[in-house]
Length: 365
Image (tube, rainbow, N blue to C red):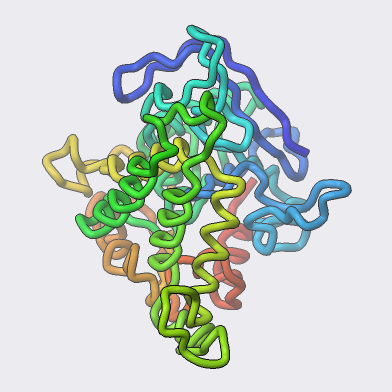
């Protein structure tokens, strides 16, 4: 069940802004052992939350986003590990974010909520770890944006993490990836209902922009092979309509995904999460030398990529692996030939899950 932790001490953000007291929504699975040595932090990607696994009573349809991986007898076995999931600061699933009251005005922060970064998330997660009595994580893991947090943990708190699982990620976005994020942000900020991020006060939501942003993003999460296999050129209606309504099944799918996403996700949060993605670059303070950036890490690493992932291609993971090896770190690398595209890290694959099960099985507690 979801819980909340309140922190009254201000948090100095990377932007220079100081965020007053904040709350983090989190869930925990399993039991923390007597030595407090079995804790695993699972970091979420763009649109997920603290609800990593299981269901809520009476809401059995709300299954945790990584339920196929986390739980009793699963690769990350909660009979052995104490697993923590956190909704990132700036989120819209219970943690302090743009929808929360601004202490200075009593109204929702809206567009005034500061931009937060991966480094800021790690700082807030460390405070939660302190609250839970976790001095050192057995592992921190995540996919995509969550994997960036798993990497940053090894740099911000090298003494507090033993293993880092970096899955379907990159150490910094390419220009193309930044471009995709900017198009999505423009779709939101140019929506007439955006109102500079203060749409809560107006009783409206920039639905059109958020729908388009999600549709753009969703295209990049799937491979061409996966989309052809799932939809092909299958028509939605009996014949071509020669209009601008839905002709193809893939069009229907994208509209459905856009409609669903805009019904539960906050546009201001989307803007901030994509900026956090853009800004992440551990090598920036080391003249672009990634091996120098990761030299301070003391954790062992498991890096996983998927050949069909063209958004965060395996070449980006291999760059990280090379940097870690150059810095003489302990690293294992797995590159899986799976058709799911970027979203493959969320899917069942016997090789992928087998490797994760073996890796966690070898972690000494």
